[in-house]
Image (cartoon, rainbow, N blue to C red; front, side):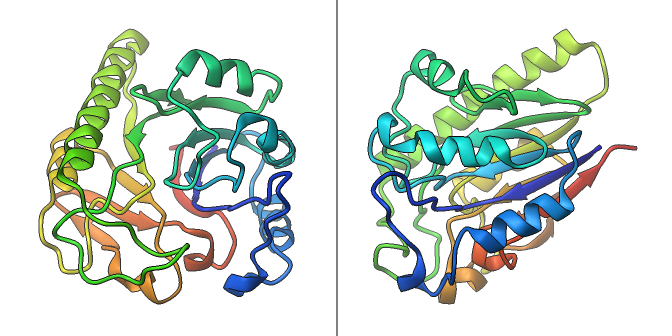
Length: 246
């Protein structure tokens, strides 16, 4: 049993929004091919946000069907472009119910997936971020109110994870999944990295960064946490292996 991560599928939705303009040729065919070759039925894949260009639930159904058709069990979280997602966990459970491979989603909550406890939330750009590319697939402005809100959501997810860990009465390996990078290549601590490192996960996977911005994310180990960038174009349009069960 293995744990993979992939961020930013940017599936077209019924709006038919393609990715050729961003240089993603024939997307999502290469991603589907690599996913189907590398991921097994018993594996788990974290989909780290920016799942679809849909703006409402009715537009995302074919994209969810596409995800469900890929091998493995999926844990989903929201990205800054997932306008279809909404804030109601009840509505999300109903939306995801027809897709049996969806193990769960992160919304002020955590998911137990085999030997792994997965917590996380979307996050946002922090003031510690270096200059990043702008534009539709670029960065967003750092906002103190959003950072405070996302830190609170991250803590709620971790608290739920701790409760589920106690209920499981088993040793689980902690994992954090976010959309925005919680830490940048400059290594300057952020409110998010401080919170994550206090939770002591084995790995933190994130996405959001594209093209010339890929190098801005921190990749490697810090304070006992391995940070992994998994946005589609950063990992060659293939799910990246994060952990393997002992």
